[in-house]
Image (cartoon, rainbow, N blue to C red):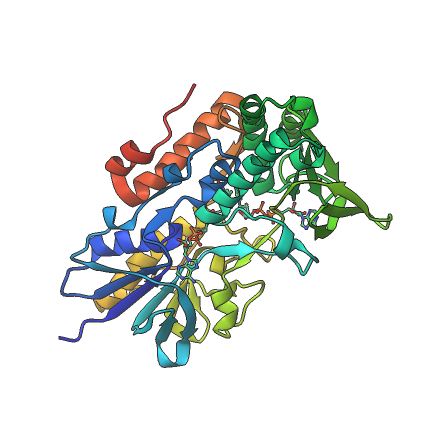
Amino acid sequence: VNKPKVVILGAGYGGLLTAVRLQKLVGVNDAEITLINKNDYHYETTWLHEASAGTLHHDRVRYNIADVINRSKVNFVQDSVEEIKADEKKVILSNGEVTYDYLVVALGGESETFGIKGLKENAFTITSVDSSRQIREHIEYQFATYSAEADKQEERLSIVVGGAGFTGIEFLGELVNRIPQLCKEYEIEQSKVNIYCVEAAPMALPGFDPGLVSYATALLEKKGVEFNIGTAIKECTPEGVLVAKGDEEPRLIKAGTVVWAAGVRGNEVIEKSGFENIRGRVTVDSHLRMPAHEDIFILGDCSAVINEENNRPFPPTAQIAMQQAVLTAKNIASLIQGKNDLKEFTFDNKGTVCSLGEHDAIGVVFGKKLTGFSASFMKKVIDNRALFMIGGIPLVLKKGKFNIF
Ligand code: FAD
Ligand code: NAD
């Protein structure tokens, strides 16, 4: 029998949740489901700031894909996607190719450097398990080197975080807890460590509740972060970053570590495949399909869903990626079963919680503002919920966050 072929690209929030939902909705004889991912593990992208700072071990943020899929229904292929040939219904992988009847593209995002000179060469980004390990190990290497060298170079200990969006702020929240540990370990006076955050917009977390933003910046400042607001990174060099406020002459902030957390774009595969896109994101129709290609569903950071209230795309989040996955699994099952009663996507925004280290956070949940313990508790509930949605109770027990106090 010729079973319809469903191919899912990417095993992040969007792709893996689509796979585990679809495996429950269709029978073994109904479809041939293939899940393709670069690594044999899934990682919690939303926890990578912790692995990057070194406050959570990188093995805690990942788990084996094989542990959550039903291998009698989903065929897992570990490979890298190079290009999608939509007209030929074919995906080119590093080590082969696959054809499909229905394709789900959920390859996530990557860092957007806006063409700023030197960033690609000299700055780190929080985008994968390996990039997070590089950051953690680089910072530690700088501390160890400072401790060992005769001619002490204090700039080694300086860290610049580019961007005070949610990623930048969450990373800073971890960093301020990690630095005292590192100082103790390497017998370095904490006053020698400088942490700078450079944000181009007139406020940190632009657009978020100003009272909550003040709570976050005051807490981080108290723990040693120097905010440079209304200041843009213009260039990154091996010595540090060149920054400027408005039209002022650029000045150099020397730093041994620069982390660029100032923007994301969709996966490069989108552009390489010649899909119409804005910063690597495809504006999808109400069923999350690519215009003119009804067999291609695009989810998560590779997709843009327009918010009709302001005519702009919703920000790329795990929250929206998971909601898209739940709907896409249902819609593909419906197509396979010949029901063809496709449902339209509407985003149900439950709110945003931004962590400020292990025991503090800010957030707006169901329209209610939260700070401190209640926000931090809520953040762990959200983190555990993502595990639950994909791997049920066993995964929550294995990987969940229970360090409430
Ligand atoms: P991802 O979950 O990133 O998964 C993409 C997958 O595709 C990965 O497994 C990757 O390895 C794989 N892949 C990539 N390229 C290829 C290729 N060429 N071939 C094969 N496989 C490939 N959002 C929230 O809603 N709440 C939060 O609290 C939150 N916190 C965040 C904290 C940080 C530090 C960061 C960086 C982001 C955060 N986000 C948060 C945003 C959120 O993580 C993303 O929007 C979400 O991960 C997007 O899901 P996705 O399925 O599109 O991609
Ligand atoms: P972002 O685009 O939201 O923020 C980037 C920040 O960098 C902006 O404030 C921008 O003004 C600033 N910036 C841009 N260019 C700059 C320059 N040259 N110099 C200095 N600053 C500059 O990116 P992000 O924080 O990585 O977030 C990406 C997505 O992930 C968003 O949709 C966000 O909502 C989501 N996210 C959510 C959470 C959460 O819910 N807790 C956490 C992290 C990320």
